[in-house]
Image 1 (tube, helix red, strand yellow):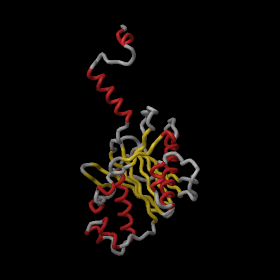
Image 2 (spheres, one colour):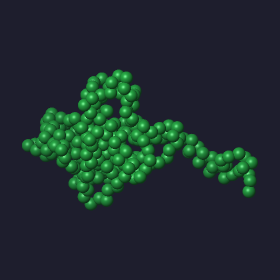
Image 3 (cartoon, helix red, strand yellow):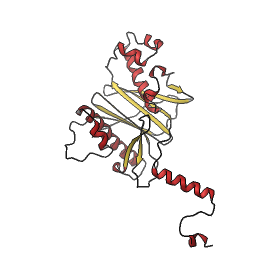
Image 4 (cartoon, one colour):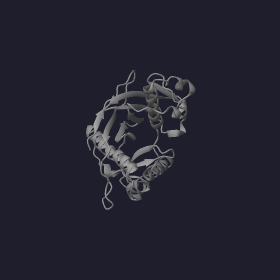
Length: 260
């Protein structure tokens, strides 16, 4: 896959390490007997009703796979995309997780995946942060009938005769919803940027806009969210609790533990 690295510019903000990549969607889908690429969940894949949806999903996961390989290379880390799963929390926000049974604790970056007009876009950000990316064709016109769905009355006034303002608001709101992990649980009409920032419940979301390859893209960076816990997390938490409760608790046979 030919992916293009996008480098957002930030105003008054020392951004954490992050990567954003853009790539065309694949032209072909795997055949019925072909194995699915890493990060594509077979159950989710079978749930798609159209080839268009399959191409979008496949393109996003292929780009995510290439992006995480680039991330590891930059950090001199060792890993393979087929050692990872993409999981979702109760609000459908995506996370990377080491596959169960590998017992790997190497931190993984936060992720955001999107697609539009035959392109996939993926964002990665350092641990402790969350990222949201959204992109649309720069010439796209958001129908006036849809304004009420995502913009306040005051904001809609600024859209008249300014289709680019409506499009900028659209990609901004999508990126913010992704960065905060809330999706449509955060009413888009309540998302109005103040310059290059948006504040939600004391969480500051930093914003950057990029025009590239005929696309308008918004990248949003926010404080990180705790990913869903794993079975390994539960074992480690129980072990930690046992060690704190009993200072003499240890690993190994009793005879070994009692040796001085």
